[in-house]
Amino acid sequence: MPRERLSVVVTRRLPEVVETRLSELFNVRLRDDDTPMSRDELAAALREADVLVPTLNDRIDAGLLAQAGERMRLIANYGAGVDHIDVATARQRGILVSNTPGVLTDDTADMTMALILAVTRRIPEGLAVMQKNEWTGWAPTALLGGRVGGRRLGILGMGRIGQAVARRASAFGMQIHYHNRRRLRPEVEDALEATWWDSLDQMIARMDVISVNCPSTPSTFHLMNARRLKLMKPTGVIVNTSRGEVIDENALTRMIRTGEIAGAGLDVYEHGTQVNPRLRELPNVVLLPHMGSATLEGRIEMGEKVIINIKTFADGHRPPDQVVPAML
Image (tube, rainbow, N blue to C red; front, side, top):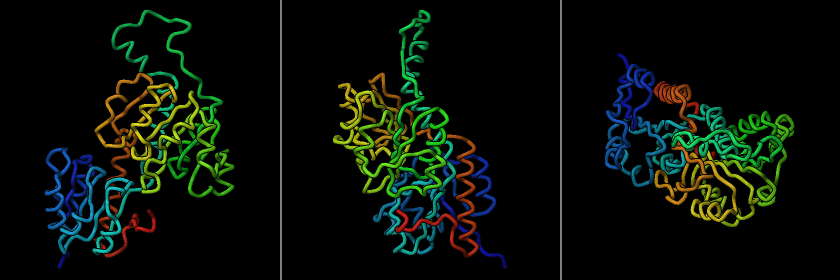
């Protein structure tokens, strides 16, 4: 007698090819519209399904997990970051958590370089001139930016994405520096021609560009606080394609407004969609709507990882991308 198919609830619309494959393999309930589930809807899904497929917009905290039904055994997150899921509480309740690591490394690193170039070469300001039909022709001193070649890039977090950023920036002629919880192995460091700084403060004070590529954890919350932001050169630029909570957004806004920092490129924000309105007004700040992972190829690969995790679990094995509290 064939085994009953797992009941799977997906909280957001996914690429069509991913939804089709999920429907072929499991008893899946897809989202009709592309809006986040309410807390009540998430609670109902946790009560009724075997597997929940959430995204970073779905906060799965201890209160929600307390409402999980006996069937709920796997939270197969669609995304690499799991700071929105209480992994420890899930484990205590016998619910496994998996994610999709490594898929979006190149896409996010590409966007990091795009932001570095956009800020240093004043690309949005040039776009605005063209869109307003205000361009009167080439001029020797118009919209002068800065050359990235020869600049010092300080990478905060040298995991997969940080290393991918280092490889790209090196090709642009930037000097690679980094701060990480653990120093890279000598052969990796040598291949990247990267200089390790044990002191984050000392690195920040000497860099031309800071790239934030570390995960969101209690220890990285406001890692770039007002004191550390003040260490940056007045000509320095900071970009963030990781998690908004790593930077004190209000302090950053104040310092850019007063000229203490030359500019910023941000793809993530401390309070989600509630971006500091003063930040929006600054011409030397490039703001993107969390597009770092937004490639069709990447999103399909994320879906494939979710499917593999669920299928492996359904077959009675440990999901290959299981997340445990010790990893966080």
